[in-house]
Length: 141
Image (cartoon, rainbow, N blue to C red):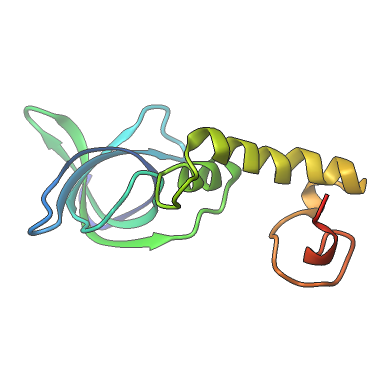
């Protein structure tokens, strides 16, 4: 394949990262791909758990196989439960690792809807507002 392709993914493993020039080799989970996707290119300060929106092209390296070669990248906020859990558990937030991240996601996904007797689909984003049954004023359970 050639031309500019788009790929949105969650970083799972950073194989190599040059702190001087930002060149990075990583593996990420992307929709419609069963296996992890290898991504290479200049992506400074990328971390495990980051959600990336990438522009680039597919290449086949004779030694390492199929890779997505990055021409442009942007770190975005996670939009899925899986992405949120990976982001929270990435170590970027002091004191929150993978186990605690899973507990937080479980709290928001399961326990809060059950406690307030609302559908899981009704909880999309927690914001520090005072309105509503699941507003910040009522979250001290």
